[in-house]
Amino acid sequence: MKIPRLALAAFLALPLTASQAPAPEALASQARSLAGNLTLSLQGELFAAMKEGGPVKALDVCRVKAPKIAAETAMGTPWKIARTGIRVRNPENAPDAWEAAKLEEFQKRLSGGEEVSAIEAWEVVESEGRATFRYMKAIGTSSPCLTCHGADLKPDVAGKVKELYPEDQAVGFTAGQLRGAFTLSRPL
Image (cartoon, rainbow, N blue to C red; front, side, top):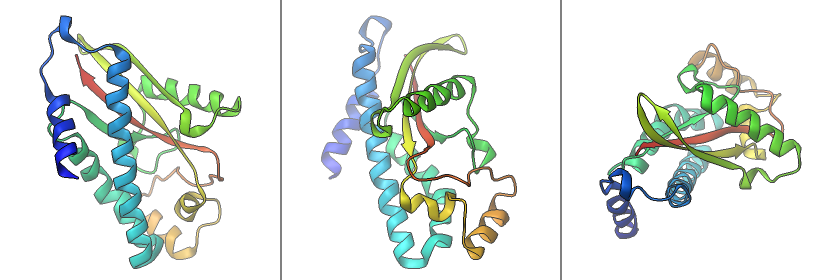
């Protein structure tokens, strides 16, 4: 479906002046759409890797392909897309102060009974002297995630995680927990 994706990219890339900036709800809708596209692409790659080579192969998807998929999803738009979490596997994905505060808020909302799939947040913040729209969408832990992020990893998976991520903190999760979030931003 290249035509709709290109149309979305063209729309998202339109230059804006302060008076033309879309309302926060419209920007959230754009970010939600991009996060959804990223989720679908990443899940497809992960499921294919699991089928082809098991969880060790899937680790390469998260390590190598996920950043590329995020960049491809944002291509042609003013958006920056990444992943973060409270307990990260890759230290480069550690949350900044705004993301850390939102992750804490997400955890409280999840504990309060909100469905993880509905948890998101956005706001306009000042960043480097410029108004920036920031958006985060919660990532829950489902059963397939536990293969690489659960408490009882198989020895080959645990060994590969240790090799690739000596500072890994992203294990010990159970199904239904907050795993992390997609984080998107764009200058206004």
